[in-house]
Image 1 (cartoon, one colour):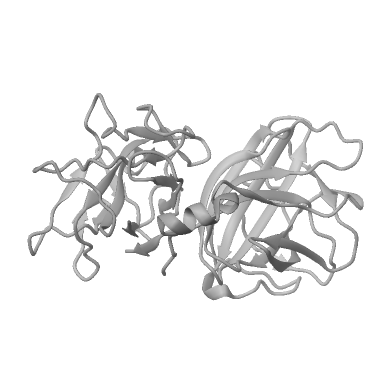
Image 2 (cartoon, rainbow, N blue to C red):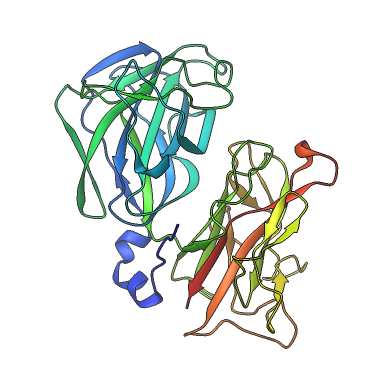
Length: 347
């Protein structure tokens, strides 16, 4: 699977996009209380979903939100109820989070991916039933990067929440109704050319996902994000001069896909005391939070120009560099670690 990453001049030309846009929802139509509902859409461009907010019904004072985002396998739509499918990859979940703000995520999406978005709001933490703010019953559309996309109803017959479905989505279906649960997304355009994708599953039952975007900031201008990691486990990013997809090196439960042959090598962004330190840990939603002060947004890592490899190497215009993330996965066993997919970037 490949995800295109904007070149620096394109990132500036599309500054309004790279700084973030919002997939807005239609007005509230009616309220549904009970099982989980949402919508699915075909991504028109490579993008990174950066925030989720489940909208409230008119007059509701619910203080918490639950959400999940999935990618359907082979861009195959879910079947119409009462048939169901589990042919999807769960990309992110969020439980018992404050409703009054977009909750940060980092979900890499490729053009053509079929993405499902689900959620509800609740009055209390750990609730066993949630509230959905429905649109009206006409075909719903939204705008992503200037493209109009259909937002089609989908759901599953269980409450999405920490007490009732801690593993997230299951037994997903489509519906002939057009009433979708109103869930807004923020996103940026860009993603990256991935390899060794997907990576090996970790103790969450899914792989960690590495994505990137040009932010136009200092250093190299590249910002990396990682999602899908085991909560509270630490890790850091890697950089290499080559990619190895034919014969990646098994390391614990993961695969090192940065080449160490043919004159290639890799370095670790774990150098204490400066911009070459990307050490952090995954939060409860599986988003990698930077603990070294080297991310302007708190999560992920702002890649500097200097490379943590011998010889004082630097990232320069015209270069291609390759990235991966190493992380600990103690729930899978003492001393166990894993790695994300790889990401190739043209500067």
